[in-house]
Image (cartoon, rainbow, N blue to C red; front, side, top):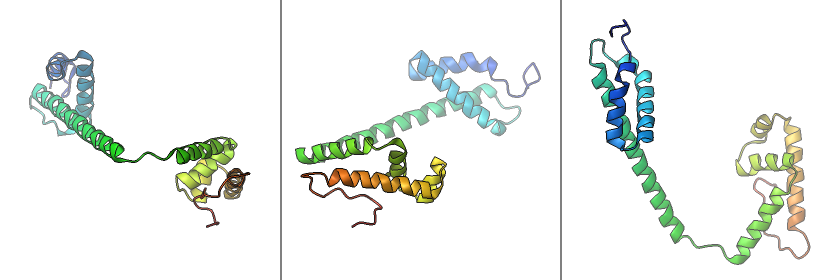
Length: 176
């Protein structure tokens, strides 16, 4: 218990926690973020604090562990980014024809009316069932199916336009 009769009063420890955090991260704003995150953790785990134990030491260990967790997270993120960069370097860019075609298909998709575009996106891109997509949009399943059908028809008309070879495959469409 502290002098006010509260068993878990961290206010008196803020100066110590901030100084320690600044020594760990060497930046005032990052230190404030670290103290904040550590205090959130301490509050969430306050039931693990043993009555009569040294609150300052317990909080300092939480600041330390939060800092270590952040360092590990940053390192793991950098490793993932480096691995993705290596993969990107090894990937072959699309030929100019494919890049232009992909841009055209994207533009045709974006030109669909909003209701059709969102319905087709949920079904074809996000792979939701018709019922799930209808629930997301708050419309009856029949309405959703109609919107998807009209969107596919518009994209087919784009694809089957004059001089266009047929190589746009619509996912989930009955045509194969």
